[in-house]
Length: 154
Image (cartoon, helix red, strand yellow):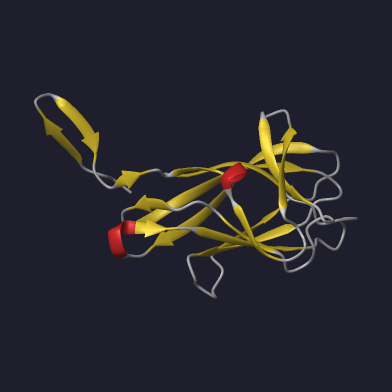
């Protein structure tokens, strides 16, 4: 998507983007067993993982902090720490019951990856949105933990 620039007295800003870089460490768990965010070091840097009481369970869900973005089609980038005990995250925008994509965090051997997921952002009040993720299990995985770093759009 191409955004316009607004210039006043030589100072230019991009119109339409505000806070479109999300740090998973600031996400909130909204249902299920997991309640505590922990910081996990990775080859990328620090990522966020939810824990206790007990690991995230099947069907647990979380919500990111709100962000503002103009309507359009984007690529959502997600930094993920993949291991053999990681699960799947199915992604939803706002209160939608229709998923726009998923992230499979299972991998052997372990790896830090940049996942790319296409998303269409509709119009909303103040162009405000949030992401919601629901945790499930990859059949090959021996768990369903999730470790996610930053999320951004372009």
